[in-house]
Amino acid sequence: MTIASKTAIPTEHASRYLQQLCKHFAHKRSVSFDEQAGEISFSVGDCRLKADGSALHIDLTAPGVEEMEQLKDVVIRHLVRFAFREELAVDWQDA
Image (tube, rainbow, N blue to C red):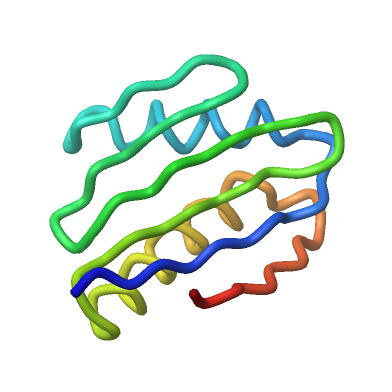
């Protein structure tokens, strides 16, 4: 069973944050990205990112609830670190 969760985080810096997240994890994880889209494979699940002019879209998949919580935590903790100049609104939509 695979579970999914997604969020769209309003920000004018979506592309910058997408690239920072992908570059950060590239030294330890399988990562592919460009300015508008990225994908990071974690041991607990997968993270797909898309940037547009108004938001950073994050789609996560994981094999279970515990792994999903770990995945959400690691992605958002790092994102908040990179986006320290602004307050990000994260509202997960679990599928």
